[in-house]
Image (cartoon, rainbow, N blue to C red):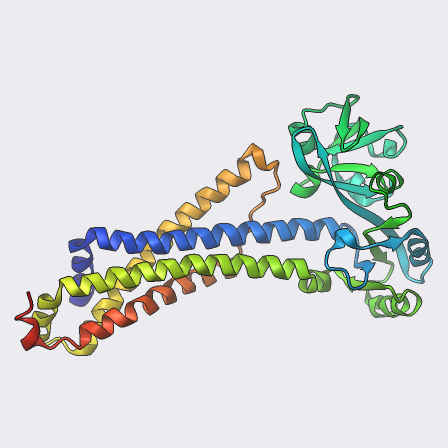
Length: 370
């Protein structure tokens, strides 16, 4: 108990330096929490777009991004004719502009797509999808930031369309997107006769392996993956996860250097004090433990500050109108545990040299130190 009290006494005596260390760890924690939560949420939203009422996804082999995948219409028809296939819903991805909005996700789909019936319709109804001449359908957030209402004409890219319906979904990407009938989207993006992916729903999910074999045999240019398997293997998801962790670890590296600098300055300013502790019976291990204890307290305080800043940043980003609902942060327990462990390890590593230096101080020489 006295040992722990001494740790807090030393930190209080060197508040500015301790606060610098806390700030370094705190900003690292906040950066990692914010980035990982946003990336995880974005991946989750995209996964839900692909997995609406489906078991398998079929797309072109050897493509780096689904925006470049091309599944011909005749292949879609053939997939619908395979045994055990209950439905095959093609989906075409594209990016469009409107007014001062440089990037809006556009979805080309057929009127039978289940996401239309599952949405909450604010204007129009799913039965009219694709039946309105030059019609475009908007997610609720897209209608909000485009300031568009049903029946009005709006410019999308180089064309002009009539807002035929507005609906709301829980998915930020969809809610901030525009929707066109598949044929109209193919014409708009000059991708006549192709889709980006096909979402497959099977009558008997247990016979999924049989379906994959049928696709591989009859459609060598296509690949069929179960939704969960696709989420684990999709290259873009892996890149996003890697980038998020890399940025977060770089932030922690800076925080670790801050802790190392804080503890080293603290040791140099307390050489005589450490010598007195040695004379009073403190062993080298106890002196080193004192430094590690101070670093651990700094790390713990930094984690608390970082989580507070990170959650505040996520709240602001999720509710900022500029992001149009595209930010839906997801915080997982494993993520929080990884951040805490990384913070503590970073602080301990940063304290290794200062602790080693302090433990080697010779009392007789240190007492003469000015």
